[in-house]
Image 1 (cartoon, rainbow, N blue to C red):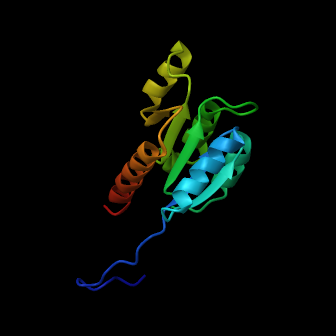
Image 2 (image 1 turned 135 degrees about the horizontal axis):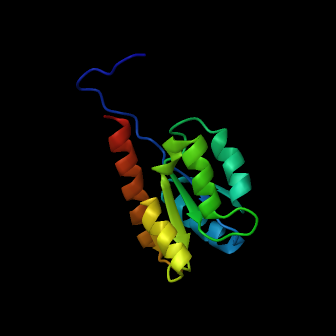
Length: 144
């Protein structure tokens, strides 16, 4: 592996998001908004399809994984559990979205997960701020 000389400038990295939500309109809005801001956005409509893709991704391929908490078939809670077991490197890249932070189950899970959550409906600019923060945090850890 080549090392850069001290004065070398790193090549800018195109940020990559994997968004998991059962609502096509939410995925489309996020994709349109972030693509215009230089992100590559991939998506899945449920946790099982997402898990298949995530398990086959290279470490560091996705900067952030945004997952709806409640989805039919395979929820964000189930995805989180599978990633903890099979791809713990991706857990630190998770951001949850939900319209249900008031239920005891959801709030208990979110508090225990230690991952950021954005409440639906959310402003896309606020989402972008959160995604950038998680991306920057992960890259700081990755470069140590």
